Picture 1 (spheres, rainbow, N blue to C red):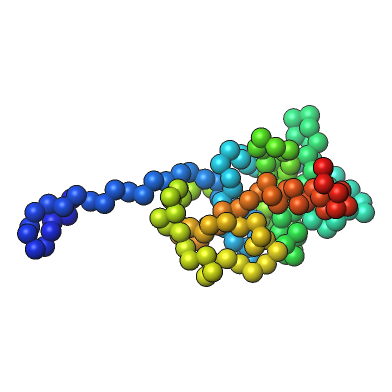
Picture 2 (picture 1 turned 45 degrees about the vertical axis):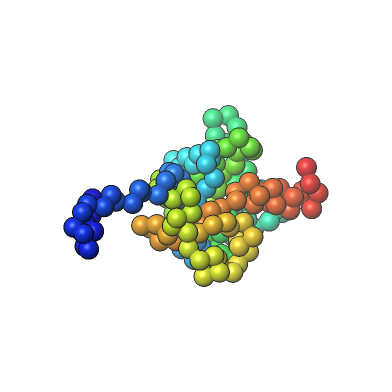
Length: 170
């Protein structure tokens, strides 16, 4: 409790803003820190054996086997026009209620508390990066790690799937 300076009476502290824990990840040093949707799990794959598939897009990095399933490997940084450092390359299995896949990352996922009511939101015009990823970014939040952007993973994956299918939805 704080004291009111004019009366000296105790004043209750303001209630803390509601927060939610979210998985955040910076897939490339030149890209923003992304908050993945609730319900999405990321698993760092130890010593994955992947296969490259010839004649595919640069950001489609092949496939990897995981517990009997073959997952496509998507490189978000390459999709956005960045080069991934092979020495810092990690594969993350991305699981949600939709199609699982592997994601190339130069960073390690972290769990971070983010204000769930927008109390820590950053001015959108100042925070939004102007690159290929901008269409998939939502609210920006000020956190102890810096600005974190909500990432519409499902919309991005839908776009990638359309692109891989030659522009055909399905």
